[in-house]
Image 1: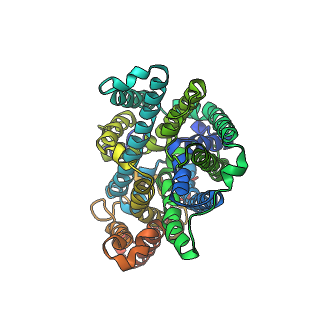
Image 2: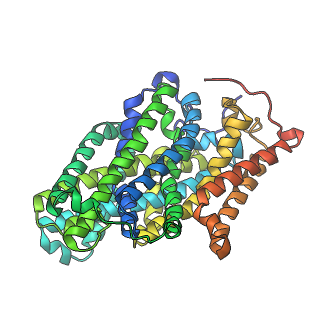
Image 3: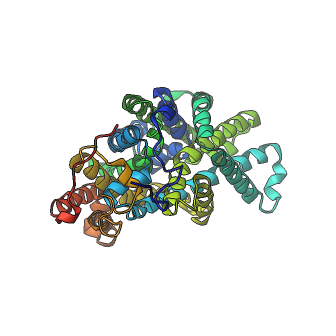
Amino acid sequence: MAHDPTLYNPDLAPIPQERRSWGTYNYASLWVAMSVCIPTYMLASGLIAGGMNWWQAVGTILLGNVIVLVPMLLNAHAGAKYGIPFPVFVRASFGVRGANIPAVLRALVACGWFGIQTWIGGQAIYSMLKIFWPGAASVPGCLWICFFSFWALNMAVIWRGIDTIKFLEGIGAPFMLGIGLLLLWWITRRAGGFGPVLSTPSKFQSTGEFMRFFIPSLTGMVGFWATVALNIPDFTRYAKSQKAQALGQALGLPTAMTLYAFIGVAVTSASAVIFGQPIWDPVQLLGRFNYPVVAAIALVALMVATLNTNVAANVVSPSNDFSNLRPSLISFRTGGLITGVVGVCMMPWKLLSDFSAYIFGWLVGYSALLGPVAGVMIADYFVLRRTRLKLDDLYCRQGIYEYDGGVNWRGVTALAAGIAVALLGLVIPPLRFLYDYAWFVGFGVAGGAYLALMQRAPTSVELPEFEGEG
């Protein structure tokens, strides 16, 4: 069956086995590089600023990442087996045209993240510039010049393609971890060692008070990587084997996130000892240091880390997603440029106004959109299809994924139900727990609704016998 040009271009095509070169190290280093970034640091520092002690904060982050690793590995399977990206994979459950709905949802969240990371990178450049040229603070629009300079750097990397991303992740991961550990050693020495840093008690006076903060915080931790848990096939399509991608991710994600979260916890706690209050933004913290060389090295490291994470986590996916809207007109590169423009329009400086807006507004809020998408995808691929897809039909009209005019309305209905129930807690105060558990609620409701609806599907959309490629 011929490929439909509205569903196919070289960037969306399956990766042939001979071109799948990513091994265990590549996936482990990918997660190290994506985890070692300022938003990860802010996760931990935000929990400390919110009242947790160091082990409560680190434990919350570790638990959240172990949980999100499960849907991450499940969705990664199709990418490694068939060599397909996320927007093509999701056609199986939502239809060849209906797949644009979850793809655009994922792309818009990624655009928000791109804007956040670019704003942080621009701030790092601005802070470093002020260290060596104090007069920069009086230059009109200097911060915005730094912001758009970092934006242009991101666009240049994505223009060079996926091989440049692979190269950056491979060499950047060990360097950035080393710089993070050096910063930890330096600031804890100034604070008098780990004793004063880690002795700060929790501010919560009762278990109930702690749980009211812990539950939405855990959802935020899961939501942090709920984005990549959907589009992980964009990376695992390059895997040498299922074992390589699964082992690399299992080793890289929880380990790197927990280690860098501990660095964020310790450095934020040290800032409270040194300055009298916890400073959750590392760029602001480094701006207070009176050691220009140390501050400059740390800011360069944070800027490199932000570039690595931004391109890998926040540009690859939406580039594919936007390309999926009109493959004949929008290439991977063009999709990356669209991501850059939309990311600026989402005003990231407001999303980072304080730790509460970042964790409970941004992270928990968008997890209500992405949890239901994951529920439908996993229910469809593992429960209904038992990992068997008909590859050619993912790229053509009138195939088994055509459903009703290219849209599987049962998948769309299940998605809408999951989102609606998760967001119900925002408008009905007694049901606030639904929003606090937004990702989990949306995942369960959407997945269950999808299976129920598909079991009652008429003959025209019944699941046929599937080919067992891969």
